[in-house]
Image (tube, rainbow, N blue to C red; front, side, top):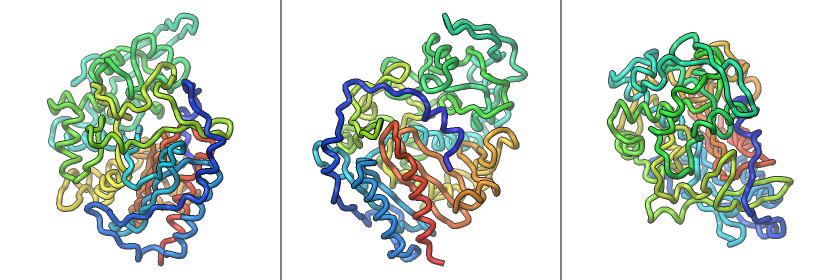
Length: 441
């Protein structure tokens, strides 16, 4: 199963400047063995909950993808009953240089940033700073009196509007039901309107701040009335700016002081410190069966810098700007599985976590796959399609990182790569299958 709500992220055309073909070098991957580690940070390491024999199947499947040249490398991690049971790196970080992928590699996690931003919002909610059904315009005035797109002229990107049915609420933003779309990677109409008004998707771009980006977005037309449909868009970027406005801190500082440091997440940043820049993973693309190392500048209805985590920019995108290790992100997910607490530190009440990880969009869109407050949610019908049980929450990033959390099985799984686009994108789905089949009953 792959979520319908990812399709708009996966369908747009990516143009890579001077990318180098690596077809002739793929043979170098064959025979590169997995690297296992028991360095699991503050999480205990214990493989007894999973079958070593069955986990060998996972090793063989993932290694076969490397050997066939379907991926350069990746890292997989499984936590069962609060203990790390599987933590391995496969393949190469850089094929040309024959640099092995390491378990502590730092990945661009893109939209996995959204869950962390949503957590920050819920922390402020529980501090009494706002109610979820308050209008966002109370805090960001540019969203006052929202307009709905009526007619659009593709010749010059001009448009007419009509009044929206109501104001956008904070809950609408958390559930992607506000009517706000994505810049650069959205529909042709959304891309055109946002580009004309200087609104960007939020990562790897110089000379703009999140405040400037969101203030430009505020007066622009919605693509449906709030609460009417699910449209994956810049909603969480708006929430990131809300965190800044309400807390009086930059989003980077709020994350660091309120989430990362308390949880012991030592490798998660918008922009990496000098001593960690060498651990940023290489970014590949895969088109026509070829793996290509992306060039420094990438064009997606505009440009962004491939190694943006190694720059020192002012844009802190709550929707996609973070980079992290698989272990750091696993700690964050274990906190969610623990109902808001990790290692003696509580970020959220159990009822806040309950709200975040339940269906918040009712019967609109997405069939048997729903959305909570920052997470995709597996319904009872959805659980018939895969091993994950009802109530599993998950998401991923456009550069091929992914995760899921199954509260009933007390299982956390993550598989991280950095490649976009990819023609062999289901290794993350296979990894989920391989994790469940290894559980000892």
